[in-house]
Image (cartoon, rainbow, N blue to C red; front, side, top):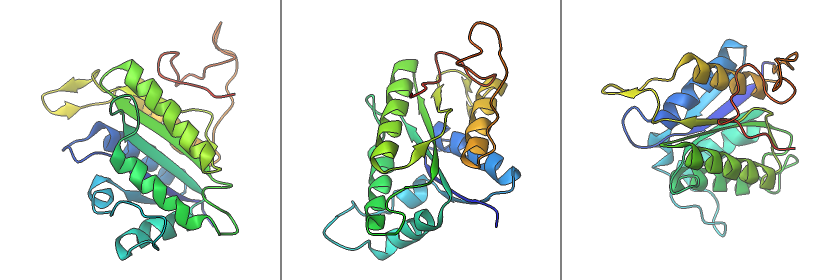
Length: 206
């Protein structure tokens, strides 16, 4: 069976950079043979605030069942005040419904983390926060995480990622599918960075 990859994230803003980034990564996973399902901002905005003392309501069951079946997950959040958005955090809180499963929470799943923000500081701190949340949910963050400064590449039509950013996002999608490639040396930074990376945009966790 091809792997099943779930993507969640985005904002309610039209042409959201975080949802655009999520779609690029998810499309790369699909192109590699994965089955995918997207939970964008429109769906996430309809979720009630998660209440651990009550079973998931009907509106949250689709997300819970998708996470339960997932082999991998891609999460994309905007950087709001240096951290993940409430919309994305509330969706991730629904993973609590998996606590009593044979694979509790996100255990055994590769999880790709993407953060977009108007500036490097918020993008990087948001990516770090996403990785921390994934660890708490027992997931395995992929080696490459994408922190994107969405102030770059924006014009009157919205945010347009350049080839370097597209390469990062596609690599995240491939790594979630288990198809990441360990690169050869690329000069002084070769031991720590791959060709899709940039020291200002990628945080690697030991």
